[in-house]
Image (cartoon, rainbow, N blue to C red; front, side, top):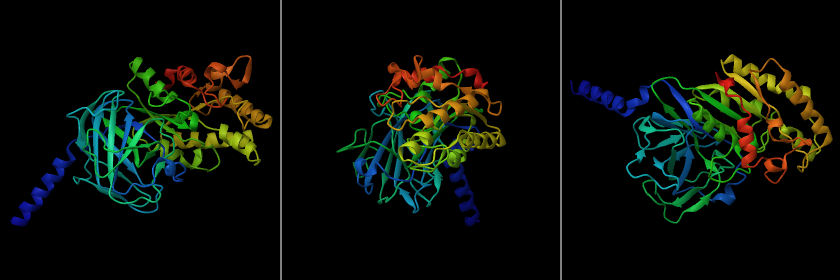
Length: 397
């Protein structure tokens, strides 16, 4: 009888710990695409052992509950999460008192991520609204030689000694300019809510957008959707330097499409902006230039994969880059051919003309001066706004 009572008690505790986790309609509200090569880690911070990493992110939609996704997918050894806490923050990044929550994992306060694996935190009873900011604080008891991370955050994060996950203000913090381990935040509203995945390279990742102001084109698309009473999440799956066809600092677009786009909870549409790095890096490194036919085959592979999962794939024209250090006449010819196909094909579920939105009318091969983020490749804040405004919201009906 005692054994039966103990078993029933254990079941009751497990159900209580699960709480809202029984909800079925999870939607990705925030995301970052992960990389394995720690290019910026040395300049960000030399170690994680016995340190707390606090990362602040902005949600695209809100919900009644949320859950956190942590990634060790690109790390060949297990990674231990000692303590994890989440809290809302105000516009200055200050924690809002009374909003702090411990993140549990199957009812336990901590977890070990398996090598090349992921873990999901338990559902958390926390009401959030669109564009709420949250701070996720992770205490790492052990060193991580090669963490799964994201090179460019376009936001200020902090790392500090010891377990300071409960601290309202970190003691002796150091700047951390990348993202690590935290890969996604899902929300739940008791009913299905859709998510659009913005899939691309550094232009999607937000290079040259003003730091900490959430002015990347996916951020601004999320703002437009809410202004038009369209409660749709936007997940940013951009990676700087990413190529459509070639692996580099990250898997190629075609090789990571399933992981970073199709596996996203609630995904209904993917906007694909990939290709300029295939052309530019090949020209700069004197490698064989991909043909328009090869690039189109890559887009077709994404379209087919999306349609097989019931996800609509929207292609974006490759933006102009004449004057950038890796521009070439041969690359420009391929860009024009690819953009022509994107505008005319009937295989994708629509297109966005990002090329036209930021190009110089007097010199369409180049980005317009008012949209140039200084390197004639990446747009500035105004350029990202022009890109977001070029997206027809009817594509998401």
